[in-house]
Amino acid sequence: MDNATIQIKIQQRLNKLASQDYDNIECWQIVEAFNKGQVTWSRRQLHGINTKQEGDEQSKRRIDDMQVLLTELTVNFNNKDLFVEVPALPDNYFEWKRITVDATDECCDEPRKMVVYLAEQGNVDELLRDKNKQPSFLWAETFCTLQNNTIRVYTNNEFSVETGKLYYYRQPRRIQILGCSDPYTQLVSTANVECEFKDDIIELLIDEAVKILAGDIESFNIQQIATQEVEGNN
Image (cartoon, rainbow, N blue to C red; front, side):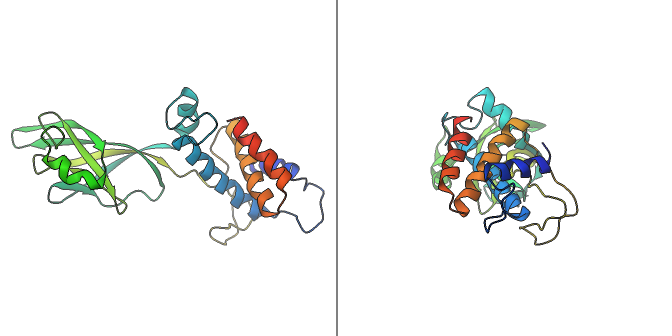
């Protein structure tokens, strides 16, 4: 679905196609509301705060809807004491999925793929001490934590890690409308950037944007209808 159609649909649902009153919606407001709607809708789907109570990959529909945001990235590590560290999360990072690493030790030069579990930072000391949960090259298992926009994969100085692959959900791509002032950069957009989701999801995102804009202009009846539409058809 192109941006012109999105604009028309949003204006139609706000009853602003022919309105000349003070509630006219400018194009930058549509861009901001639609992009905000993409983020809020995506967070609900990944976390399961929706009418179906289905979170990340809990149904075929959720897998199909969110796969466009699922990203694979090769990462390098800095060696630290007891762990290796990815220096920084990607700029477009949205939500964690998993990480895999290839490890070697003094007795095995052939890289071994490790199973890496995401753990809480508060449990690190206990996990390093627990014989059943501490990093083990023999069992090809370890754990990682997220802290200060970095990823720490713990080795307990038992093995070495050179590279790995990070799987994560990235931020939805922001739409831009040609000739419209970009609300994020304050520059006039020189090209159309269209929504990357499927048309059926864009219909929900339109209702999401309408809900936001209707709240901004205190049109509560329209806001209620849009809220029912975006969740009832999820």
